[in-house]
Image 1 (cartoon, one colour):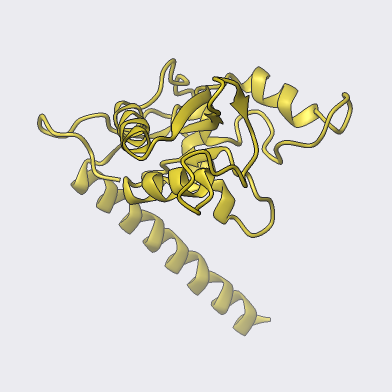
Image 2 (cartoon, rainbow, N blue to C red):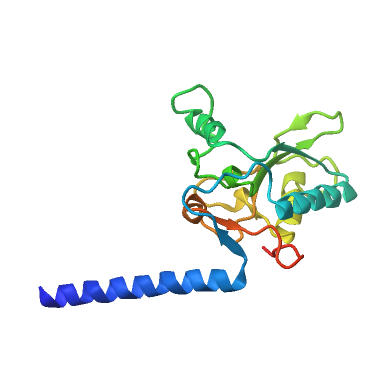
Amino acid sequence: MRNTTSIFSTWIIIILFLVLLFTLYNQQNKKYEHQGKDASIPSELHPLVEEQIDKVIEEAEKINIEVVITDTLRTFEEQEALYEQGRTTEGNIVTHAEGGESYHNYGLAIDYALSDQDGDIIWDIAYDGNNNGERDWFEVANIAKDLGFEWGGDWENFKDYPHLQMTFGLSIRELQNGLRPKTEQEGEEVDN
């Protein structure tokens, strides 16, 4: 019993030490700010996310792909309604994230679609409107990844092809606990 208590105490000390190191590292880098558990939820996209998505659109236009942003910041209520789709309301399941569990809720994610030659919004991931032999959807995803986004189409358990996010190295739990990426650092944008 004494050996078990000693091992448990050692692990507690190690975990507390790692949490302290993480906190000190973040404060030293000043990439994040801790706003506390009652932190307000952003009312717009993070400036770097907005800037980079504009670049995605511009780069896609250069190769004759028209990107349409279909969703950006979501309230917890909007996220909860999407989560209920296919569960307690009609439709297909489109997310596994409940309210407060999506990067959309913190202004760090967007969803996109494409516009075809007739100007209609399409969700066809096989569409090759610029006739270069590559799927336009994946071309856009690659542009976005080159600009620092993570793409939901790369997820193993649930492919979310319209989804792009910048996490800034923060988990959902950290965001829920009030940690936020700073919008500027000494006059410069924060790197992802």
